[in-house]
Image (cartoon, rainbow, N blue to C red; front, side):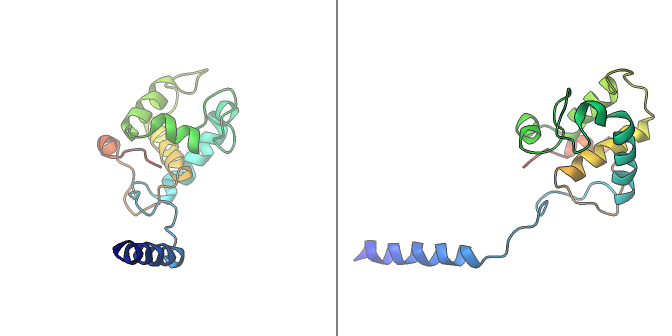
Length: 135
C-alpha cells in the first residue's frame, strides 16, 4: 500500500509540473546592464566583432559568444574573466583599440544575447567578478 500512495503523489506532482508557469529567459539572472548599453554594444559589435563572431554571435572564425557552446565554455566563470579577454585581445586585428566604455557595452550586448535581462543600473566594470555566467 505505501508504494501505491507514493506513486499517486509522484503522479500528482508530475501533473502539477505541466501546469506550472514557464520560467522566462533570464528569470534567475541578475539585471546588470541597461538597454542603452546593450544597444550601444550591438553597434560596436556589428562594426568591430561580427566579422569573426557572426552577426548573431554564433561564431564564424572566432568562437560563439552566445548559445549553448558559449555557456558550456564559460559556465561558472565571471563576466570579469570574459571582459578581460575582450578588452585585452579584441578585436583580433587591433587588440585594445576600443574605448573602455565600448568594451563594457559589448559585454552588455553579449550578456543580453545570453538571456541576462536589462535593468536600470549600468554595467559596472568594478563589479564584474560578482556576475557569473550561467545557463
